[in-house]
Length: 560
Image 1 (cartoon, rainbow, N blue to C red):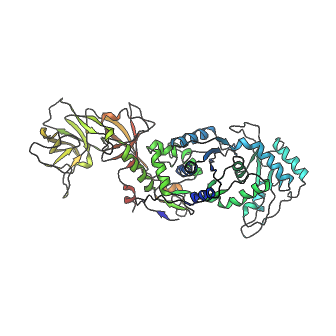
Image 2 (cartoon, rainbow, N blue to C red):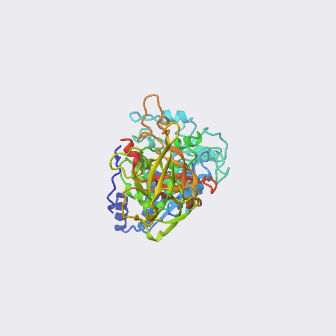
Image 3 (cartoon, rainbow, N blue to C red):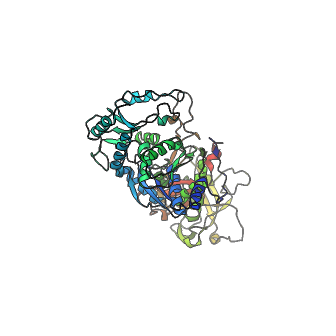
C-alpha cells in the first residue's frame, strides 16, 4: 500500500465519489438521504471509526438527511454496555448526534420471521454439521464446496428444527441455520452462509430471551432495510459481501438499501485491529483503552486532541476507493493547526537547570504580563511571577557554544521571555563535572523589552520561577511502534516485537503556577516545547500532563 507523506495538503473542495453518487440520486428525484453508523459494541472506537463517523454523519448533514446510530449487537459473548456508552460518548465528543438510536437486537423478532420466510421458500435449512465440517465443506477458491448431508431437509422439518433451536432445545454449536444458495459459487460467501448460530449467553439488552443469534451478513442488510437506509456506507473489505447483502434483500422482497464501500483508514506506526488493541490492554502494555498511545478516540481525547482536529484530519485524507496508508504526521499536522489557534500559552521547564540571579534582591518578587495566545488577542494576558532563582531548560545553555548559538552561554546574554535580559557569569559543577547551577546577572532596565543602553539580543528563552514553580509529572508520548507497518516482522517475530520501548518517557517538570488548576481536557502550549494536556490522573497535589504533540514533526526526521 502506498504511504502518503506529511506535506501540507491542498484543501480542494472537490466532490468525492460518495457525494457524486448522492448528487446523481438527487438529480433523479431521489432526494431522501438516510445513512447510519453501525458499530459493534465489543470495544472502543479508534481513529478509523472516526473517519467513518465523519463520513456518515457528514454526508447526511450536507445533503439535508439523517444519520442513525445502530449498534450491531448480535454476539452477546463479546458485547457490553460499557462499549455502548463509550461509543455514544465518542460520537458526541466529535460533534455529531444521531437521528435515532437503534440496535440490531431491536429487530431480532423481525429477523427471525424473515428467516422463516427463507425456509418456506426453500432458501434456508438447518445443518447439523460442526463448524469444522462446515469450514472444510466450503471448498477453496479453485475447488467447489460439498453439499451438507442435511441440505435437502423438507421445509416442514427445517421449520420444526429452527423453532426448537429458538426454544433452546439444542446446545451451542449443535445446529446452525444456513442459506441454501450455491456450493460452487465463485464468491465463497455464497456457499451456503450461516444465518443463525446457537449461543446460550445473556445479552446486554434482551437478557436470556434469545439463544439463537443472527450473523452479521444476514442481519446487516435487513437492518438497513428496516430503517430504509438509502446509502449503507462500509469500508472496502465489505466489497465482497455486497452481492450477498443484495441477495438477501431480493430474496425477502424488502426495501432495497444499497451498500457502497470506501477505503478504510490505515496509519503509519499504528494498529487498528481491535483484537490486537485488546491484547495490549489485557496484558498491561498500555494503561487502558484510553491510553494516549492508543489510536482510540478516547485515547486521543485523553492525549489532548480536539474534535476539530480529528474532523479536519478526516476531511484531509478524504474518501478513496483504494486502500492506502496515511502518514501519522498528517494527523499531528491537523492537531497542531487547531491548537495553534485555540491553545493558550504557558511556560514549563522539562529538563531543568537552576539559575541564580546574583544581583536580584533576595526575597523580592514581581510579576510580568504574558500573552495567552498571540494568534487570538481575545485570549488576553496573565501575570507570571519572577524571583531570584529560576529554572531554564538545560538545552538552553552551552558552556562551549558553536557559532550562531543565540541561547545562554558564559559571558553571553539572552532575554527571559516577557522579562529581563540576563548574562551568565559563572558555571557551577559537581564532583563529576556535571553542570548543576548557573550564576547570572540581570539588567534591571530591561524588563520592558528593551535594555539600559538600547542593545538587542537574538536569544529568547522560557523560564519558571523556582519559588513559585509547580512540580509535575510530564509524560512524553511517541508512536507505540518502531515500524511504519507494525505487522512487518522478521521470521520468528510477532507484531509485539515492534513495540516502541520509548513510547512513553516520564519526566519531572516545573510549571508556572497558573497550570496547577488547569482543567482536564484543556490543552495548552508549553512555549518552545510542545502542546500538553492535563491527564485524567492529574490532581492539584500531583499534576500530570500528557504531551499532545510536539511543535514540529521531529519523529519523522529521527526515523529517516
